[in-house]
Length: 350
View 1 (spheres, rainbow, N blue to C red):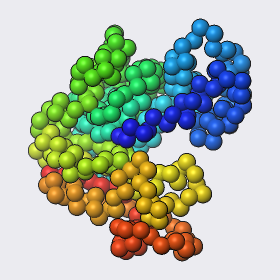
View 2: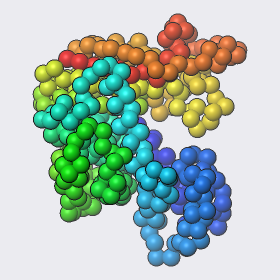
View 3: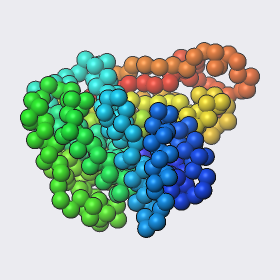
View 4: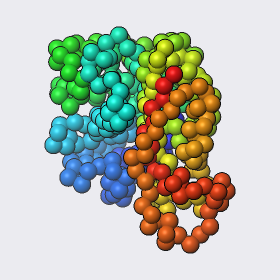
């Protein structure tokens, strides 16, 4: 949900693949970032040689590389879909952790789902998979401006992938024929123009069949959301209480949510040499709110939600034992049981 998730360095290097002489450095950067698999490198090199950029708009070329040209791995799933499937797997893991009933099609019938903080590049894809597995309707909420060409490419790649090879996306036991019918219903005309208008904020709601993208939570059905999910979103939200008040307003009676929260200092992902919790020592909250788990949980509870938690990953003790620096406030006052929490699953209920 943070606007800095533009990842301008990645985009610049995709541009370089087409328009600069030093394509090898650009390819190396994208490989380090995990966007290009080593096995696919020859194909990317061939594409770079074939595409000289003549007559190609920079933004269009970047989008094409970013979302459509990732080589197919052995499972036959393209890069945008692989990321979506990982998000769906995370949601299903959270459901299983708390023993909730949102995994089988009979549990999804007539229910409305919300993907909270869906992202600016592919905000519709997780919702599409959820809808095709049996939810009555799937909403995707993203408050920051979307990148419409990226969104369109990722959307069409996913939908066509679900139609071409549905097996990786089926998780609920829904009949394959119904799954395919739902997927085909999402291929609507006028998508490009609609996404451009949404990106210009001419509307706060964009309905694509059974999937609806919204940029304002006021556009969600009041009292109509049965279950909501988020994946590595809450650590980026500045006002947790405000958003959980809004989630409460749109939650159906007995509504619940599942949230995966990554408390790691996100700079560590770009530079593994940094401490996983570098923020504890320099006080810099880069693209995150920096909340400790207890503070986040208190804000959620104050909005009237009952909360259950499972810590699924902790920072190894060795990272703290070999650190000579002193922690800064407020982290210096917290106990190790609080500080070591890396990834938590939360279930919230009304």
